[in-house]
Amino acid sequence: MGEYCLYCHEELLPQVSWAVFFTKAVPVFLCASCENQLEPIQGPSCQRCSRPLEKLQPQFVLKDTCYDCVRWEEDTNWQGFLQKNHSIYLYNDFLKELISQYKFRGDYILAKVFSEKIRTMLNTLEYDLLVPIPLSKERQYERGCNQSEGLILEAGFKPTDILQRTHSEKQSKKSRHDRIHLQQVFQINSDVSGKRILLIDDIYTTGSTLRHAAKILKQSGASSISSLTLARG
Image 1 (tube, one colour):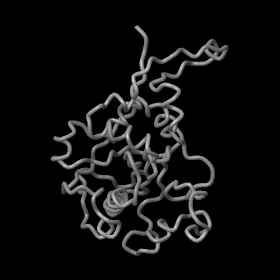
Image 2 (cartoon, helix red, strand yellow):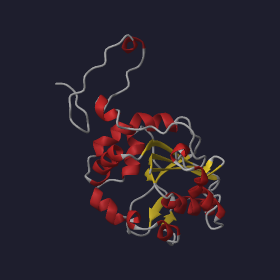
Image 3 (cartoon, helix red, strand yellow):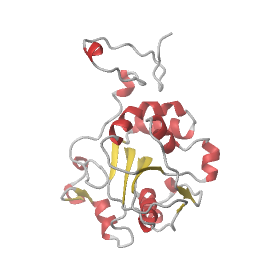
Image 4 (cartoon, one colour):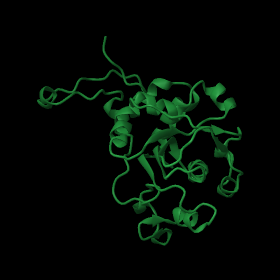
């Protein structure tokens, strides 16, 4: 029985070339048509959030930083907490549907699609603890799994669950202003003194969730906090 694309379920055709005999085979989980719809982030990007700078008007870029990040760092309540966000893909329509199927419809096998890219990225970054952004108890019950933790596990790494979410409101429904001025939504259940933390989440949109997590981690003694997300929205 052949293997099938995890998204569209078309049969995966084997790729035959001389390289197959001399290199280690990398598992394939998407057909070529689906794979080609993913857009890796390439070229100049914001030094803080990975947003492609070529998609922005010049007035929204200051040197190598997008205006959103400039505003975050000008705000004394938020500056200096999140060192850098690394994102792998642009959040296009295809990836939006793929993440939605993984995140909201319980199709957790789709984490395999991203495992190799995440593994490669994690092997280039420096950190002491991999910390998934947690769900509230209500969201965890609804979905049956924390999608951020699943990405870490499928890539072959060990997550460290030191954050707990203290509310269940959906941030996707909030404006940027409301997200920024939301009261702290996390609490910590472990000592992070001197630790380099790498937060893992699926999407970076405004950066509010990651900065709320980074802020409480920094205030609790972590030496640095960065993040890795699948997509930059």
